[in-house]
Image (cartoon, rainbow, N blue to C red; front, side, top):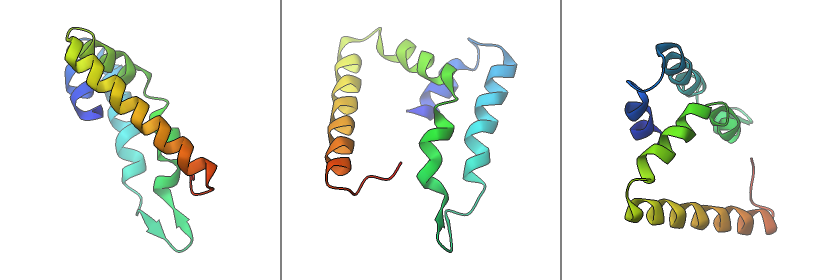
Amino acid sequence: MFVFAFFYLINKIPFSYNLFMLLSLVMPLCKPAYTGAVDYFVSFPRYTLTLFPIYIAIYGLVYKSRKAFIFYLAASVFLLVNSVAFWCIGRFIA
C-alpha cells in the first residue's frame, strides 16, 4: 500500500516531502535483515510512522471508492485483531 500511496503523492505534495519519504523507506531497508541477535525489521513500524504524508495519500486513494474504503477498513481491522491476539499470547514484538 505504501508504494501505491507514494506514487499517488508524487505530483500532489512538494518534492522535499517525496524525498523525505523515499529516504525514510530506503534507509531501514539498506541494513541486513538479520545479523547475529539483532533483527532490524522488528523496528520497521517505528520508521514508517514518520511518513505522515503517506497516510494522507492512503486516505486520498480510498475515500473516492466505497469498496476500496471497506476493503482497507477490513484489512486494517484484521491486522489489528491479529496483532492484539499475538500480543496477548506473548508472541508480538514491535
